[in-house]
Image 1: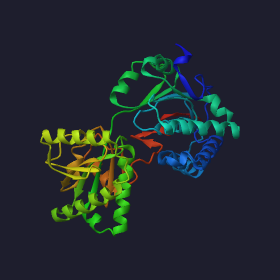
Image 2: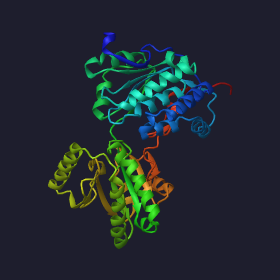
Image 3: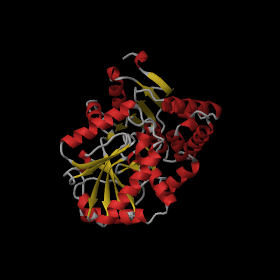
Image 4: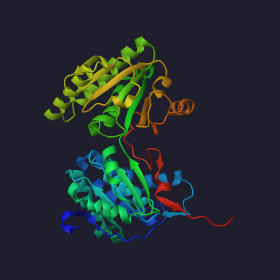
Length: 397
């Protein structure tokens, strides 16, 4: 194994393991300093995903997270966490690093070999903060590294010494990394291929003032276009709930508003051709009854019926599917384990959650409003990361 085969973007490949309590004061102080530095950086301000991360790690938000998670004083980090970040979401590596550090662990984060400016910017600011504010312990206990598929012996090495392994990526990535054994007491969390959809109340859309319709469209745009629909939590399918006449009117208003917002999307030629090819493939398979396009920015394909597995209907770069349902259980019955997020508008999140208990489905780990699907939380994909990345010390009676 050659050290020249691995690029260290931050820290070390041999982190010191010094477990701490989750949300330790020194850790929260570090993240708050990092947050402020990111928000003040001119280059970072050009990237909404970086700024969103900066707001997520600010002290007020971390204290809020800590407060929601009850008594933590009998918990401590498991040791060292090895993270494999995905190649489709640039800023994900920073979130998974934060999960590991906030829960009291040392960390090695493998970032994608795909070039992202966000990775360079975030790591640059991280190094500046560590030096300027004397958070040298962060550098000594953590590493952010990069290596290609031909250097997978590094994944084998890190897997063999970690106490927890977190794999973000497709099903294929999970299977590849699982070839490398863990220590007997080590555990693993996988975030594999997932799928998300939305349910909108037609009447609620029609009742919105013009300004609020624009805001709803902006929220949907942020959920989907910002990540090219690559994020596991980005909706691909929109289910319309309501009377037939109301649904048709709401569809027209909603998609027209989304189209107006989508005009700011960076629509490269590659995206146009790939999206058009995908539309043709679905049309050839006779899965859609009609396709409406709003120039090349937005394609909406109306489904003939709901497939047995709704996660089969996947769009890209502004291709969405829609279907009118008579009741929420109609779509819940088609939910598989691949479904992660159900985004809603005009419907209580609790209503959907209650129906999930009545119509038990293997999928749906999150129910959130439209515009909030990309909001990262310490509970993700059904995993309570505070508790899974730390161990409990029991004592007394």
